Image (tube, rainbow, N blue to C red; front, side, top):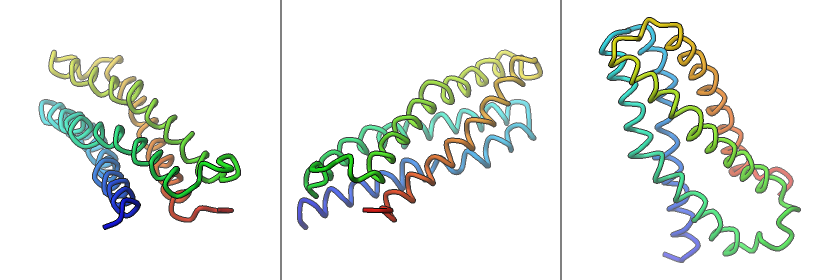
Length: 155
């Protein structure tokens, strides 16, 4: 197996395992809202566990293997001429920021409130609405990144 093949395989597998799992959040989040109670808190804990065990490693592996692939494939020359690539990188950075700075703390705060018996409060409801807004936005961003990386429009 060549170095390029190894990097590409690691990059793709990491994306599938790390980010593919996040599509389950679109099912688990609304199900938690519908279910309520301790079961909902358990589902939210499941979301955070998936993030920490699968998504966080991918968040590290993706930029490292991505940068190595850029240099290995010679895309570093005329980098800004490959708009599909830098657009995907900018979207990726924005998605990671939203996920780590907004979405995960929102879910963790919901867990904290739910465990303390405050799942019926306006604060909990507001956090649920925030998670319900940013979650789908992250899914759309991920789909755009996948499109850019696979189709390489203009590339």
